Amino acid sequence: MRPTSRRGCSSSGMPIWSKAMSLTKPNQELRRDLEAASSALEDAAQDLFREAKTYDGPEFLVVMKKIGKLHEHVDRLRELTEEVKEGRIVRDRME
Image 1 (spheres, one colour):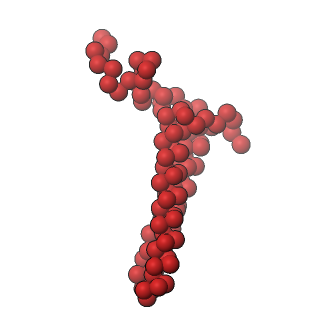
Image 2 (cartoon, helix red, strand yellow; image 1 turned 180 degrees about the horizontal axis):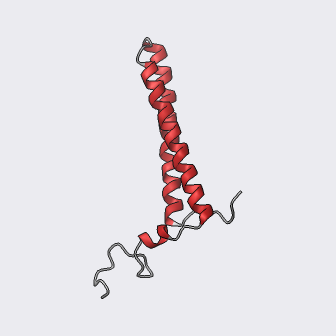
Image 3 (cartoon, rainbow, N blue to C red; image 1 turned 60 degrees about the vertical axis):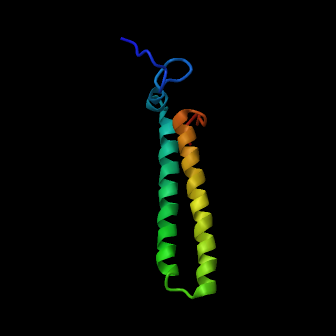
């Protein structure tokens, strides 16, 4: 029985999750690599913040700017991860 609603479906009528389920091995690896990189950067930002709490005003502000940049990179990597999942970024072969 086919659902009557197209909600949660792509323009072809296939469920959206089917694209993520059909990632090629190279794309799965790319997605894992992007997720690992974003997690590592987020961990580094948290470590820096723990250390920065001991700093005085000007030093603290300098480190907080760096932490902000790390979070921007984390956000961008997560966006790229989502694009790989959705099939908008494709790796043709493993490197």
